[in-house]
Image (cartoon, rainbow, N blue to C red):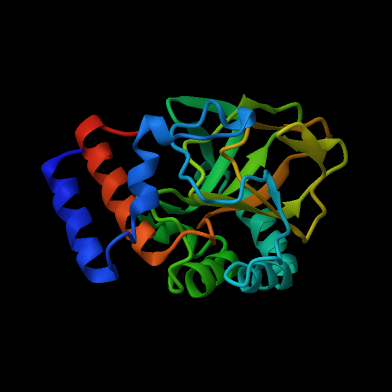
Length: 250
């Protein structure tokens, strides 16, 4: 670690108490790494978090209100999405996944690069408002990552991969889903149900596909894993931000 990270960690422990970020420190120690075989390609696995690929969207008190808000707003979210796609399709860019991009996978960002994408507010106001009020203002968004509408064009497939870490968790609101679409996480295949949410740990290997006859769109929100503490979230934010500044990205 850098002196800056060491100093920040000491300040966090002085604020929250000794041992408050031990799991973050353990995450950085290869000798203390324990991971499920389906997490083998993830960069970091923080110990002590539930090692299960799929979560019930309503099982966590921190996340359940977010799920209810987005599901309640689904009809308006879907209508505004279609209007945005018809009116300003160029706002949907090729999705960039780490160092690669995919032209048959489009994204309209609501939050990216540590800030809200204000240009999207007029295009998808309902989703933007719910994200702001129920996620960002409540400090539930993992601001190291993003929120976006994810559109797979017909025939598109997202290859099996693990995301970077397990201390955030991925919420999908199924906005517009044709038949013959699916997602597989740690070998278990599920289907999106329009207007409903799925919640999964994307440090486990996962893939998705659209074999339907029209685009499949979900709204994706990167939330803090509900089993992480405030102290850990502060430490993880400092850690990843500093490493990104040093290396350009992680």
